Image (cartoon, rainbow, N blue to C red; front, side, top):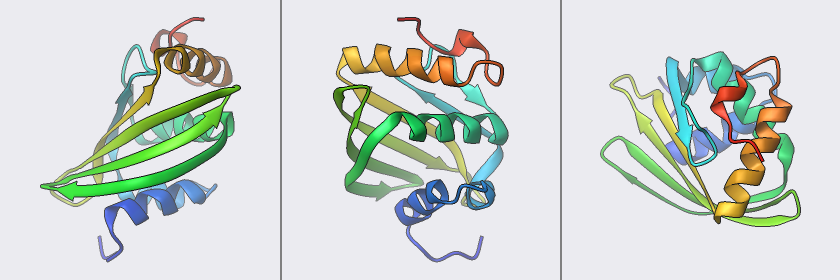
Amino acid sequence: MTNHDSPARRWSGSLADPSGAAFAEIASADVVLEGSVFALPIRGRQAVWATLQAAAGIYDALTFTGDAERAGRVYLDWTATALGLRIAGVTVLHSDQSGRFASIALHHRPLEAVITFSAALGRGLAGQVSADHFYPQ
């Protein structure tokens, strides 16, 4: 990878590209997405991209408030509003040896937001990602 931007900047830039091409450049083919809103991990670049796009459509607003980087991991703090709720969270990105993100962990809080967001995400991904990956509301 030749991009010299920080991992946090590459992450946020990839989410802003609706084509998914920027995400494909920074994520490994077998990337895994886990987090508080998922009952089971989401695996594979296409399924993870579809899930991230669906999640982006649920948020009314999302602001990254801080970041840190250490030993192949990036930590991004954020706040958001979605579904009439105030949400806070952290995203943890783990890079593989090639510099691509091999695992992504999204952690939402509080618990009401976790359950509500998970159910909405499951509805939004019906037919694309198995409902087993989400919590019912």
